[in-house]
Length: 470
Image 1 (cartoon, rainbow, N blue to C red):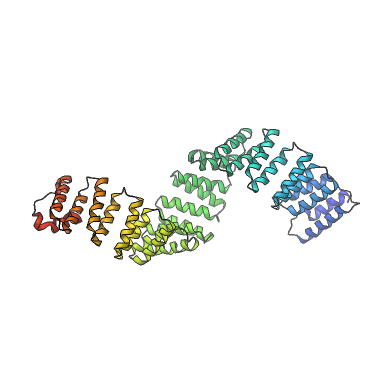
Image 2: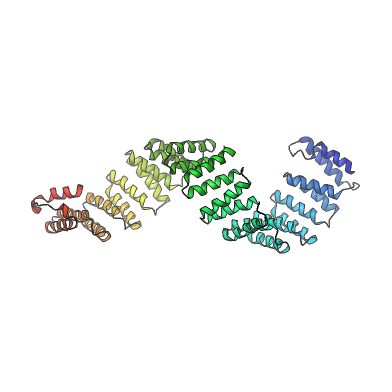
């Protein structure tokens, strides 16, 4: 095919995209003509066309043209290289690697081939192979920015953040305007919990690329973690000005408003997020928390319902919904939720504590005692847990366990007069008057201002009620 015919064909829409029927027909005609044995093929021109198709993501067309080049010029590295890139674009990764290797047979010092092969290994999660490819490129060209940057990305994916940082810093030394490296530095330092450094690099990236909504979003997260809630909201606002229909930014903006106690604004942000993506369990959960904080337990429960609908394995939503039901005195519903929560998360004392509260309210004291024993297995150093346990034991009339529980409280803190009064009550209820009197006197020693004259044997019930309910 003469070169002027190819140019004429190109002007008729070769680059117009895959969706044009005329283009598809013309391209197939073009391929058939190139495949004819008598057709003269201009290597450089076809190579340029392949690059054009690769740039616009038309990998099938690029692949067909690269096959023709390989058939006609079987000893040129670039044709194999282009075919490998097309195969990578089509997710045929292993075949792509094979053709990168063939390209390197003809040009073993081509840095670009090693870099692209490394990127393909990266897509296959073969990080050791990608690392070796980028290192080989750097052996040939130590100051290759593309090799250093992609090596940093590979290290980052393996959570080797400090090594990745070293690569990105080398890139910025070679090119102070390499905005992508500043972005990745912000990302790495965030994972290393170096919030201020992360913030600095995200801002350096945004100085060069102010329209990157992802960078504004990530900056907002970093600022939120530092407790800079107003500044995080400013970052989310800019992100949303660039891309308004970005649900994660609305969600995290809601989190920042909630942290500031601006609950109505938080609700607005969460609802905006749900208007874009209405199946996000975390957003429903946080919206439920805000309504709960406002005392609107019915709306809170409605949102926790949706959170559980979209994530039935989130113990926190069951737990939070149960606490709302407790506040509404719907104890059966509360207990059901706490039972679901402890199945999903058995090692948090607060869930068992709430479960015990619901069981106590339903007068299921034996169950409540078992729940409290689980609480104490998980956290035996909090005297409040022991006090809650004694209340249930009194209801069960298990006074020996009551006394043992108060002994544990006294070991934690011997200066709590209430512990001695509680033991006294248990002794009196066991008709052990002498020990009961002894405990009241010990309580008075701890709190002398409590002491007053009375007939211990005659008035012990009134005294204990007075001392224990103040």
